[in-house]
Amino acid sequence: MATMTDTFEYATFTGKRETCPSCSMPIPLHHIARRGMLGQKDGPPRVAYWHTRCVNPDGTRR
Image (tube, rainbow, N blue to C red; front, side):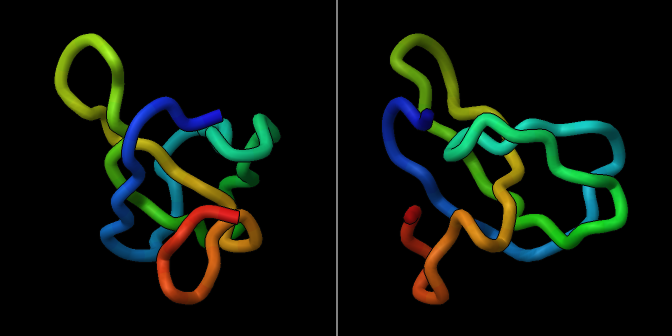
């Protein structure tokens, strides 16, 4: 689950196995994912990938 603020940049394929922060399920390498920044309580935001089904068309998290 996301901790602070999610901002989405674009849709892409992941280069390695990633876990969706919204549903905690793995994202298959052959599926398109939404790339973005995941805010953290301590430290700078980190790059994260979400399933396209876990993000609304307007870019908000489901």
